Amino acid sequence: MNKIELHNTLPYVFEGRDVQSEIWLQDVTLQKGETYLVEASSGTGKSSLCSYIIGYRKDYSGNICFDGKDIRGYKVSDWTSVRKRTLSLLFQELRLFPELTAWENVEIKNGLTGYKSNKEIESWFERLGIADKMNAKVGRMSFGQQQRVAMIRALVQPFDFLMVDEPISHLDDENGRIMAAIMTEEAMRQGAGVIVTSIGKHMDLPYTKTFRL
Image (cartoon, rainbow, N blue to C red; front, side, top):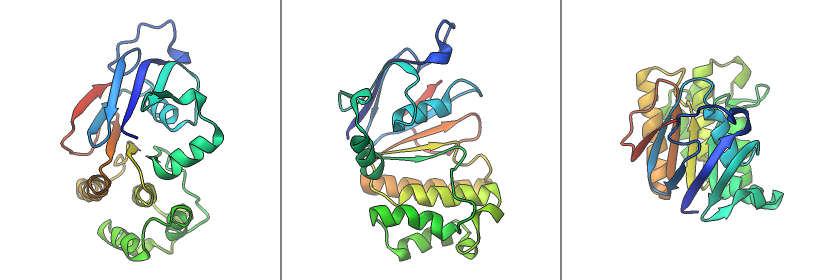
């Protein structure tokens, strides 16, 4: 996939309101290979935007298109393929399995894609300072540690676009810098686009464009 387009898109819940946004009710094109920041205030639909693009929610008006094709026409099989090979999302709420270890959470996805070697995954755990937590249950880890696990999980697949929803909200500056470096390296290796959302603290990256939601 080379581009994501939003045409006059608006969450149903915002209809009838005076919406001032550079995303909602606009024509927006996100290109593969570029890096975008979506800055938002709480309650302006930041996580909804991610859910619309990944196909988890459809409670919006207007259109969202992948390479010119409206995603409302996608079947379950289409979304299965997209989420396995084209789009990857790091959720704000992470959606990890607390009863599983950090390694098991990553391996569930890598087992489906077969995309990364154990050595590559281990190196990311090491760089992110959580190598000693690989066999720890996620439910016993801090939220900042869980964010790092969720980032690793998001990277163990091929993608044309990577979306990360407030990825460093609970990280110190150094770990945020390391996470940004790993994410950027993998996105560049795949020639992928990156969409970062934030309500304040965000990754320091050379953004192609910043949108105010």
